[in-house]
Length: 285
Image (cartoon, rainbow, N blue to C red):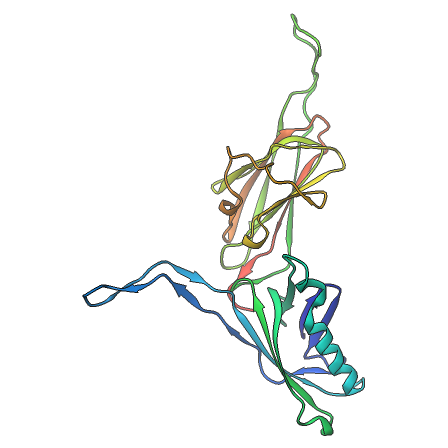
């Protein structure tokens, strides 16, 4: 299986004879730890501060050959796709680099160091660097659906005043979420209406409360990874819907294991539901 770059609507495969781009060596992954450390004044030793993981850098040495297409065509495609114009010019845009294992890193193509000294022999080479947003690799998305149960109905208890309500009020439903990988990852919570003031609780982790009224055809998405900690309704940002009475998006990081997810809200129709989308995180490609 080849390594693959996806940048917007364009992609490249490295290590596939059909594309004419081969990998000369195994890609190198470099990750660093940054510390708030300082020397003890007028004494021996060093005080170690908190450590922060910088985004990793993936280096690829590629070779272009005219296996199935002219060499110049292969080379031009490499230069054009590596520019990643479709994503780098968009605020918050990113590309993905997928290893031959199927795990993916998020970031942007950076350096391209061309070497065309063997062009006359129908070989062009280049050193590539892909800068990642973090130091992790992510597996395919795993989706868990939690649905509302249909509220019970019944008669009236007198004395009663109009308007009369025939449903049982807020309803809830539990689901089991299994997270793979070998380190913490940030889930994405996708709430499908109709529902008033939904609450998502991951037992033992935290609770998100939303002050929002979703119609039957509306969807609210809450991302929790550090580069997508936002709430979006039908594709448009909706700041302020996350209630301060609940936890923060940053608090909802999940390690490998099994979790109970509770969805609560007011939905007399019983048709609203929650999708929990998780990409398991790994420390190696």
